[in-house]
Image (cartoon, rainbow, N blue to C red; front, top):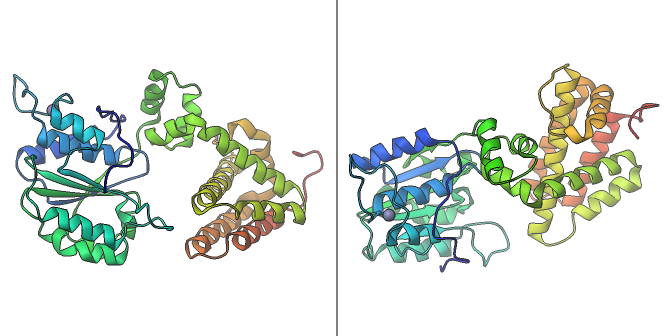
Length: 353
Ligand SMILES: [Zn+2]
């Protein structure tokens, strides 16, 4: 499958997880790189970019360091640039099937990949197959790849990238070596954002839970959209039954990706309001995700209490489960809001509007 859009010819790794990459360097240098790696960890910490970086490191044709063996790719040679661009013939990236309505990596894609792997690598010392997100492999696709994951063609390394590794088939997991990426210290994310001239870096880093790429995506208009969605949710909860129905109705409309994104943002907003309310109800002083709406957080803490917060968190979990199981979006959201409203009870006199 041809790359959808060419990326820049240089790779910019986000901060953090240097130790993980150092271990990969050591393994690669010792010829001990497992032929099937799972890069797992939260969304937006640079797992896929680290996979590309590893492919660059192994295949770099640039001048080696004067002192000692290579610890990083040169970034300037033909191999490095084309891997960064996503256009190296031997670094194959397998992503969601653009021809499918649901977000999957299909068995057709898996078969096409297997066809490519019957050929010898074109130019690379080591061919890489980067599957991202690997948890989107259908059971059929994963099964089609299973034998190859176990015994890949010579000079071929698979990197399965996933934020939800437990969704991978156990048979796939058992054939792989796990490499864990973690969230990054907030001050490093803040410094990284500020170096790019991004304002409000502290709020963004906190909201993105230490995932640099997510923080930057929030900066690029995502934060505004997130706050707007949260405010619409709050308005619906402050209104009556018709407002809640209208909210649920509006969130169930549009094409699949659109619905998925707005519903996801709304549920995320509710989760973070609950977390903030819990912090305040316990008298904690930890920074709030909703620092711009402290009055709402305190109102929720008072109206829900720890018991109410726990109940709404359960309802939220149930709603996510229902949606994953393809329950009608409008019905699932309506049920969730009804349950939140019931736990919130009537607005306190003199409380937030
Ligand atoms: Zn290079």
